Amino acid sequence: MDATRPYYKEPDLRCCPAATKPYTEGGWPPFGAWSVDPGDFLTKGDYGSYGINGWVETRNMTDGVGMSQENYLRRWKTPQVKGAGYVPLSMDAQWIDGWPGPTNEPPQYDGEPWQGRNNMARFCINRHNATTNSVFLDWSVSRVGLKQLWMFKWHRKYDTAGPWTMAGGAQPEDWPEWMRSFKDY
Image (cartoon, rainbow, N blue to C red; front, side):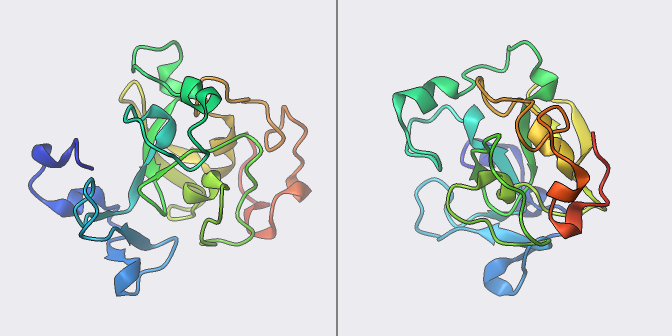
């Protein structure tokens, strides 16, 4: 948020048109926008309904998965990477950022607030008919299926054939009821 602030005049640019009302004003996932304490030194009271892939952030601070040396090495430190079109940069989200992992489980119901270290739930929200709007590290923009989220290269060591993918053995009945009819990829 802080890095992009000089480049836009309207704060609503940070919001999906389907999710403009902050949680603090009665909005709720999947159609609510996150908002941050005005005293936060980085976000200065910002609100929005898109979130950044925390694995692409370069600032050195504690993240949602712990700032171990191993996790630091998983981060993308440049956009000039092979397969940048498969590395999520930003997308519809419940929170300002997230650090998804291949074993993160899908939310049990549509709009379930993310909890603990299940960072994929921050992005797995059904605002757009089983899809989400995404910007990738190569600056391409695409609407992608919610089940497809587990197949992207979120960080350098991310297993794109993890347990929530067809390659990893996921079956339609493994998904929560609200996602079972969504397209498998």
